[in-house]
Length: 173
Image (cartoon, rainbow, N blue to C red; front, top):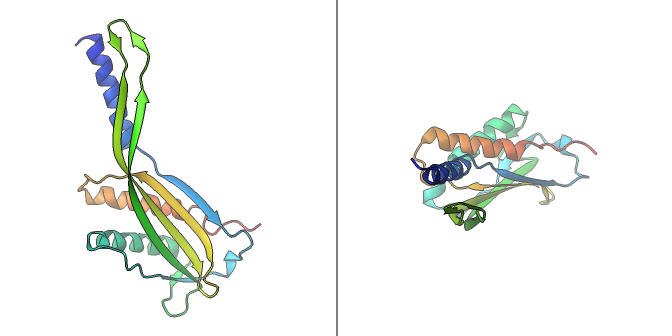
């Protein structure tokens, strides 16, 4: 294999590996004056926009969120919750362009174009009485639409929930 072919193969392998290991980006915001220590129970705000294709995601997401919140001492109370949880998401097409503009004898780096879909999940915790958002987490990552591996999907949902709850409840100010 020539040095040129080896370099092209190496660049391709790195690009594929980075895409496969793409991390989730998280943004957390919350009401700094809210007393989160009063929260013990929660309920879910129904999302009528969930399409049939996303019903299984909804079930998996809620189950994992319920488990993680229970581990933190919160319980579901559909009748009189302290806070409510709502979520929605979006998928956008993205393009990443890398200019490998350096030159080697007999080889020019060129431009690499990578097209992908990025999913964003926004989760709001809302005070049940005041109806004010008290905590918002946004998680974005490259979509793994081709995956049919159940465990891999569960792992990604669990990772997203853990990032959402990383700062919940926020520290007292």
